[in-house]
Image 1 (cartoon, rainbow, N blue to C red):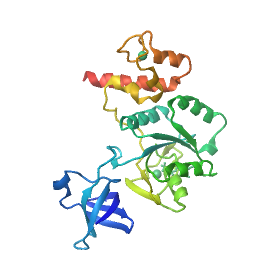
Image 2 (image 1 turned 60 degrees about the horizontal axis):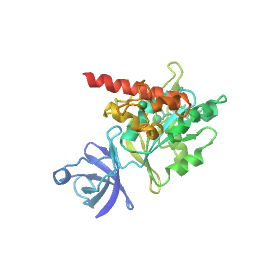
Image 3 (image 1 turned 60 degrees about the vertical axis):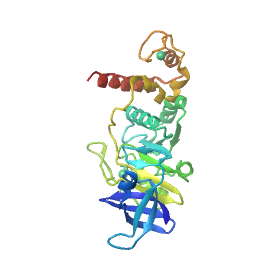
Image 4 (image 1 turned 90 degrees about the vertical axis):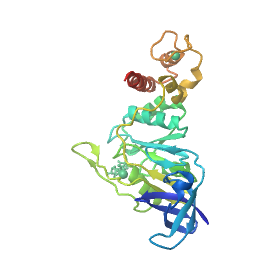
Length: 292
Ligand SMILES: Nc1nc2c(ncn2[C@@H]2O[C@H](COP(=O)(O)OP(=O)(O)O)[C@@H](O)[C@H]2O)c(=O)[nH]1
Ligand SMILES: [Mg+2]
Ligand SMILES: [Zn+2]
């Protein structure tokens, strides 16, 4: 019996990375035994068979640390959300939706701003001002001049990282630079549309080195409304958590009520107004959804 990690599943075949190599497996009888559909990232036990059309059979999935629906992957240690300094311009509202999704799953997030070489001046300070109160680590990188790439390597090493970000920000280029080889297909940003060409088609766990894996998911432009109650949203903004119980009203939703401690912190510049605007925007969507 060998233990390994599922890299990808394609049409009922699972590619499992073990210390003896990658084996193409089926999951015969597994669903009956565990009622589980294997996910990329799953740690499993396989039995080598070398019969039929495959090399092995997955006989057991080990308990999951967590699992995500989008992207469908198990055992993510951290999320790395990648944006570009420019080209395409950062959409912080989208980034904040992503951090909320990760907070719901309690997955730590690192923000990576790529294409730092395109910086014209004070953009980095501005991004740091917005995100410092949240406590998210913010990293600035450039695949072109290599800045920040050592720090990125250090963040990734020994972990399973889910990488996400709009297309065209340089996710595939970054993975190629990190592995020092051509792993992912990259695409030019369409000049006409100023929008990345969709070139990342497969969702697959990639092994970078040793026990370092990343999951390169297809680019996202919009995310679903999170499946939480409006009253739970403030908990998905780490910089708002200290104000729990400090508002005038016990049931304060921090959406304009008098005596709101969160709003005071925004007025004092302790919480950034950009992040608070994202809170209000998602909050309003949650309220709207509740009415239907
Ligand atoms: N200036 C600059 N361009 C970059 C950088 N990283 C990637 N690119 C370019 O951005 C475009 C999109 O890159 P790609 O890796 O396909 O992005 P993905 O869609 O996020 O996978 C390509 O033309 C890359 O050469 C960077 O750090 N700086
Ligand atoms: Mg790509
Ligand atoms: Zn409040």
